[in-house]
Length: 109
Image (tube, rainbow, N blue to C red; front, side, top):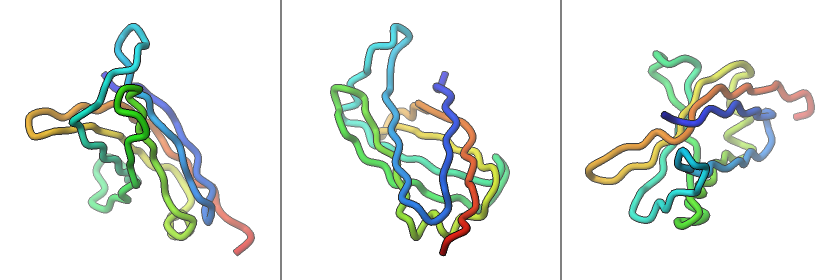
């Protein structure tokens, strides 16, 4: 079962957060050999997705960084989105985190 974490993004700003993949004992899982991916949508059934940039910060520490540039967040409509983060290889996919992203509107442009 994926961990649940809700996130917030301010339109027009650089967004960065991270995920640490842990086992039931809350010990980081080595993610060597796995590739991360993440996306967000207005609803689970929306055809349009925004791909979040993912990067592994630490294989042994199970640490995956998520990010969007200020230009990318400026193009997001304010409101509620759903997202998830997965790790995969040719044989298996693990959903490691999911939740809601709230995008707050920008005033200064």
